[in-house]
Length: 109
Image 1 (tube, rainbow, N blue to C red):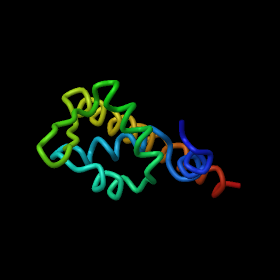
Image 2 (image 1 turned 180 degrees about the vertical axis):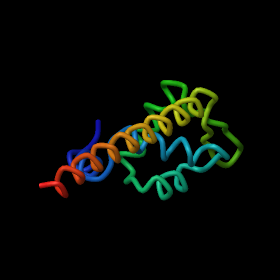
Image 3 (image 1 turned 45 degrees about the horizontal axis):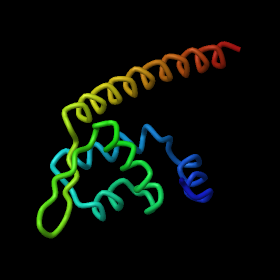
């Protein structure tokens, strides 16, 4: 369970799916938990909760060595990332069109 402060941190900055995408991108080449936490810019409770969810859904795989665990994006994780990026691009284009319509109306009045 996430601590309340961890949930508030996530809610005020990025949504869960933005953080998932950042974590999956970071894990493309394989990464330690500490480096994943720093690169994704999340605190430890958020990292644990989200990492557990990504592992349990098969989006991240864990490779265990003698000394540490390496976290890697699975094929489904890379697929998620491609879809996420496509959706962000579509949303960005739509937001730009909406902004242009608003600005055009503002200039005319």
